[in-house]
Length: 329
Ligand SMILES: NC(=O)c1ccc[n+]([C@@H]2O[C@H](COP(=O)([O-])OP(=O)(O)OC[C@H]3O[C@@H](n4cnc5c(N)ncnc54)[C@H](OP(=O)(O)O)[C@@H]3O)[C@@H](O)[C@H]2O)c1
Image 1 (cartoon, rainbow, N blue to C red):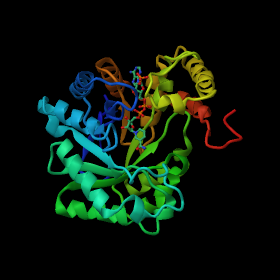
Image 2: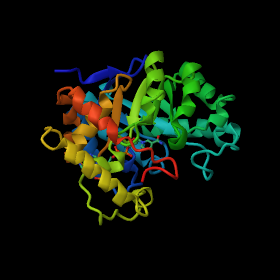
Image 3: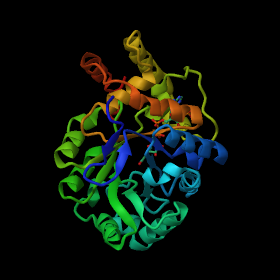
Image 4: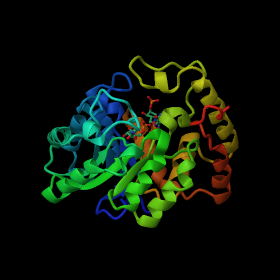
């Protein structure tokens, strides 16, 4: 059987190929009971998860706290790498506008305050990976916040430094990678969003930068469990993400993928995760899970054999460039 682990780029973090995404544990996806989150995290680790992604902003630290609490109950906790993120000063545009100044959005006092809070929330003296939560290419000439984070490596508060891409301009972090300013990048790559295969993933591979893929299930659509009249809980950010006719258009496409997968032996969710893992640059995929069952099902994807190259090729046809107003129809 294939190994279930990768080194995250050139770091010393040994991560499971399927990791756990901690956004929903902050209750930004509607109410998420703490006990249910703890049960989910415990089940994920017991099923082989060795990488968890969270952020200072997920429920204002609630996700970080819940992860620390769950890990405190597990003997395998020391072998689980935890990554968090520092968001820019809010309120303010997200993604940052081209006119935002890095000194205003990521000032040192703010970075210091959030890092110290994350250290407390995660109950540790040194965080495995700290990522800036978003970016703009306007800051590439003056990446002072990343330089500040790298100094924290020397001080021992942070082991490795990364950046999470802005959704609309993921390639903006390529310059940072080339200049050795980050150990890892976190990016969106899935059956619909395949643009990173053009440049971002090949460059990460060439440079040996760690790659963490997020949103591999397109926020749940690539599970294939929704019908066109599906409604999201109040407080679930997907009310906006799939607003207007977007849910309906997305479901039309997921049905087409399911049609292709008929008789392949893969469910839509399994094929979506295997597709992402197939790229040689990808070290880990952080998949969000709301409950024990979802976490266990997702971890089991690491046990599936390599996907047939003909099927992989066919799945490339589902690339859907939604970013342009005139396309995606
Ligand atoms: N800017 C950033 O840096 C950024 C942005 C987004 C995400 N992230 C990170 O990436 C992680 C992953 O992304 P994501 O959580 O947004 O989306 P995702 O992984 O694409 O989708 C996760 C959701 O799909 C559903 N799901 C997952 N496994 C399932 C299963 N086995 N059966 C049925 N449903 C299942 C669950 O939602 P329901 O059951 O509620 O449908 C789950 O919360 C996040 O948790 C976060 O750590 C980072």
